[in-house]
Structure formats: structure tokens, C-alpha cells
Image (cartoon, rainbow, N blue to C red):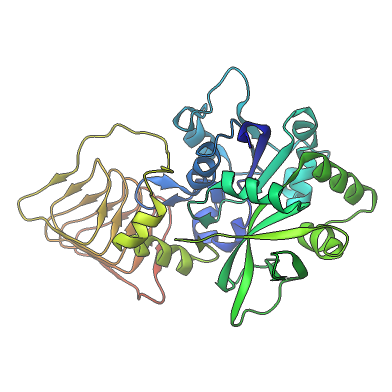
Length: 371
């Protein structure tokens, strides 16, 4: 089908509380990932790669960094006279901090939904890193005659509050849905990506408001599993749901494996991001770098192993960085050592200092912190 008949809607603040170390001053959507990207880049790229030309980004708070990254939407070809990208702050009579659920966020976007002419809507969060063909998902939704299609992954369910799991029959229809069940063995867990008709979504939101319903998963999915035809859409390849600092740390370092990078950054569906046009990375005479992703604009004079360095990172002479993630403009002083750490933007490790965590318990260094 023509995917320009599909409206995209992204929740930028979903699950902010899952990684407080990185989302205290920013939304989940603007959390840096993979050396040069932000988490919202994956959701936006998945949409524009299948031809979606109108995308709303629902926000709640702390979205200054998000606005700076998104700009006019030009990197995703969403800077347009017609359609394009729309930032949707909470247009609500409530205080923005009171908007705590997906359902309330959707209800605050009702004006945007009602004025959109597209027939279908794709809803997605920003805490899932994957490269999915939404065009294929929409085609599967229409072919199955489903009311709602839910993207899912089979495996051990991430430890996220309110995450749905689905029991599917041979045709892919959900026969039972549970929310918040204990994690255990192999399950079909939701990736919080949904396709449905805009008219159905509006009707469900109006009914929810009239009945004072507050929970998106329980009130709109669990209670309607028999009344509505809900289908699952399996997502293959590299898929990581971020639910803690440990999961963020692990997902980043998994990109050091070539097969994972090939699955996530496939040439047929590129991942777009804001372009910085920084200078190339400079490697000093004593620099030693192995199995690492190094963004542009870095200056490396020490040793970097099994790590990810974002733009503008400086590693001093004699310094050692191992199994770590250093975000933009971090500075590692001469003869310092950083191991198993997640270092936010503009952090500084003074010369001679040692910061050491563990692969199962990485240390977090906040934005602008000097150690």
C-alpha cells in the first residue's frame, strides 16, 4: 500500500524512569547511542524508510535536547511545506508532569490526530533499538484484516513495568494478553510498536476518556483481546529493548560485533541522524585502538579497547579506556584509566585517576561531572 497514507506517532518520554542515569536532563528519545546516534533516530528512520511523510513526536518534559537534535527534521527528509515532523508538547489542562501514561499522552495529542487525514497510524516508543520495515508491517496488518497489529520479539521479556506479552494462535492472532507478568522463559513480548486505523484509535481514546480509563495496555488491549482482532508481527534481526543502564551498556557494546552492525545498519534501510560535519579523528603517535567504534572529531593519544567513543572525545597520553562508552566531548586526562563505565556528555576524568566498574555492573558518570 502507499505508506504516505500512514501517520507516525513517536513517544519520546516513554520509560524515562528506566534509565534515570541518562534521562534526568533529557528524554529517552534523545539518549545518545552507538557513537553518533540518538535513540529517536531509529524510530524516525524506520518510518521515513517506508515512505511515511508525517510524524508527530509526543513530548512531556526535558525536551530541549530533543528539539536541538531534531531541528526542522531535515536529516530525515521531514522538513516539508506539507506534512513533515511535528513536535507535540502536552496540550492538556493538567500539569505536564501529571501526564504519566501512554494513554494520557495520546489524549493530549487528540487535536493533532483529528486534523490528520491519514487512514492508518503507527505508534512507537524510543527505547527499542532495531531496524524494522514498517511498510511490511502495514501490509501484514491489512492482509490479515486485523484491527490492531503489535510488533513483538520472541525471547526473555525485558524487565519493564507494564510490558505486554502475547499468546498467538497459528494465524498470528492474539488469544491472550498479559501485562506485567514475571519474566521467565521464552515469551512473545511487545516492542510497543502498533499499527491500527486512525478512526479506531480515536474511538478508543474517546471511550477511555468517558470511562476514566488510565492504562493503555490493560484498558485498551487486555480488555479488548476478544472483542478486537489483535495480531502479532514478528521482528527479526538485531532488536534490543533498553530497560536499565546495564541493558544500555550491553546493547552499545554488542555493536562491536560486525554481524550486529550489519543487521542494524543495513544499506537498504539506513539510519539517519543529525550531521555535525566535525573534523576527522586525530590519532597521536602513541595511540593504540582496537575493536572500538570511534566517531569523528576525537583526539586519541592513549589506548582504547572494546569501547565506543562519541564525537569530540579526547583521550590523553598514557590513558587507557576499556569496555566503556564515552559520550560527546568527554575528556580523559593523561595516564588516567577508565574501565566498564558509561560517561555522559562533557565529563572529565583528571590525569592519573582510575575509574573501574565491571561488565556486569558498569559505573555511570553524569553529564559534566569532573572526577
